[in-house]
Image (cartoon, rainbow, N blue to C red; front, side, top):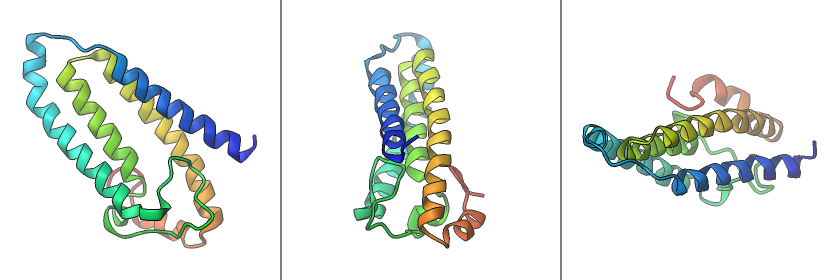
Length: 148
């Protein structure tokens, strides 16, 4: 499959899942109260991870798994600990939103998004390994989604 098409499929599925997540209603119950504060902590933590990771990538930032032509391998900041902190942060954020809304459907969508991020990151790492010789070494010292 052509690289451009694969990139668009991954990004399209990602944004489709995010849209479905946000249009899916939550539930109003006492169960929501039990999960509200842990959910808020996850929302704040996930948001901080996503925003920090995006700012650290600067001009390298792209939604596509194929790196930009002008990209350089950034291994500092959160990327010094985890290879895909944006994906990790999005999952943490969406878990928090699922808890706050007490929605099993949103939780299921988050699980599907996690699976998509797994496959997208596998494809992305092939692209990064081809572009950057040092990527294989970088993989040995950092966790994929969570610290080693």
